[in-house]
Image (cartoon, rainbow, N blue to C red):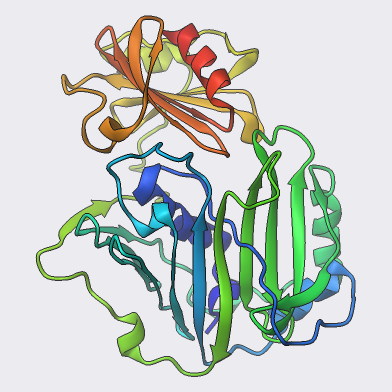
Length: 385
């Protein structure tokens, strides 16, 4: 009964990350505002506007037209890979009042279907005839577990704390998809990497999100855009949201990190010495990397070593594991441009919001990622090679 506006932050992040991750292990989704014929709501403090959105009556359902625009990847960066998630597309959105929904993006290269419920997320990409499925963690089922919406004072206190780390705009009145709406923008004060700001717009009367945006530094256009261009409220048929992948589609099951407790939980392996003792290859983890101090070393699963340098969004992450003998450019990575780092060929994906590098050396597979420029990522990788 909560629709998009009350999906938990974790669920929204899982949804957005899964959609972009199907393309290139990407970043986030941004949304650009669009005009309409509605009337802007009256100005009011941000805390009050947020409170009104959280306490607005829940619609029976949502049906909307959307436009997805992708400015994240440089032209030609992913040659040979065709998908509406890369080229951009228009489409439709349906959401029921019991936590189910679907986004359909249509383009000449094939459709993309994103379908979710309270228990599962599925992304079907027609260009590759592949469905990616992810089981979602259970949410609290009772109102007492879910909690009541915070008061205006509680929201104000949170915003005051947030202001220590980010610049938060006022609630800006406007019109989105023909609806009176408020928009807020949040910009990190430090350690933001290549991120300039995140924006969120919502229907002032219904409290339903109409835009969510991620902008890169130095650009007035969003890195990615998913825009609601038209919206209506009312019951949504089951047939609009209960869509299965076509017969014969390849199904890839994704797994989410487990947070289950209990006495049988496997202890975390952290620290360079302990992690080195747990893996059969030589871990490469200098004390500093590109001027950033090593902040964490941990074992992820039983084979992957995650090393973090720096803090916040400007941190650099390195994943190392024993090479399996296959080429680092196999599959999708093979379509990425190559660069030479320390005499070793690496595949590189450079975007407005960050860079990913992948290479193999001395029997170890390396993946380096960070919200840094390609030149900075290459310099960091050269220090490891």
